[in-house]
Amino acid sequence: IKEIADELASAERLDAELLAEAKRHGFSDVQIGEIRGLREDVVREVRHALGVRPVYKTVDTCAAEFAAKTPYFYSSYDEETEVAPRTKPAVIILGSGPNRIGQGIEFDYSCVHASFALSDAGFETVMVNCNPETVSTDYDTSDRLYFEPLTLEDVLEIVHAESLAGPIAGVVVQLGGQTPLGLSQALKDNGVPVVGTSPEAIHAAEDRGAFGRVLAEAGLPAPKHGTATTFAGAKAIADEIGYPVLVRPSYVLGGRGMEIVYDEARLESY
Image (tube, rainbow, N blue to C red; front, side, top):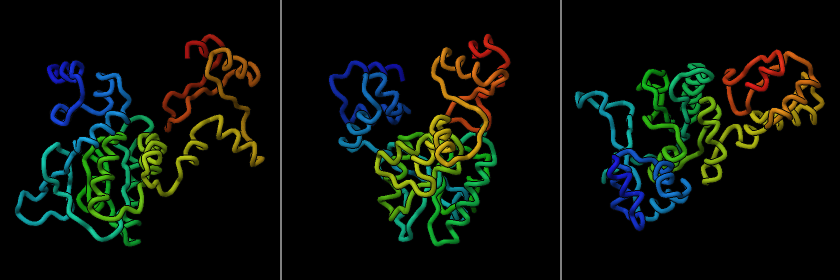
């Protein structure tokens, strides 16, 4: 891996052979960009222009004893894909990934029921999740399952693979917790149809300042609040409101990074 990293750093240009070798050894576009001093999107554009894309292989959950009901896919920088064509429009649901503080099983529950509802509505359901210990990755939850990380690079490649297989009705990001929520705007910027809650609405709900303006414009009562990016700004707001104050960042769920602060010294350390 170090030899490939050194070659990426010293190569005069990125060619298809070097990129494919780096990808086979697990280098992401972000990591290649850091090594080369390039943005992630630039690396992706070069890689796509050179035709270096992953294909998807099937995990045979039945060990060839009988036909597997749900195709389980994983990516590989190989030659042939095993993603079969389809005729029904598909909806891709982004799962929640590993369970952790602020992102637990309740989001998986939401994704599962979304899959059931979309299937009843006549859509082919495609689940993207990297946690095998969830209901969303069970064989009877969706029509297709991708065991892939919930990163922009991986999701874009799955969308591309599914677009070659058949029509895509959209991607659902609102049910999997903070990880897919954080991808919503970037997916839209890359031309991916985000269905359900829009990236703009997600921003208005998750950005504390933006949400405060929504409340004010709607005339809805709310506790005194403010947004700050420096200690001085936070101190001024806390002095106006009065201690104790509840401090928390934007773009988090489940209380992550949240704290009740009782005095100025603790506010400064926060």
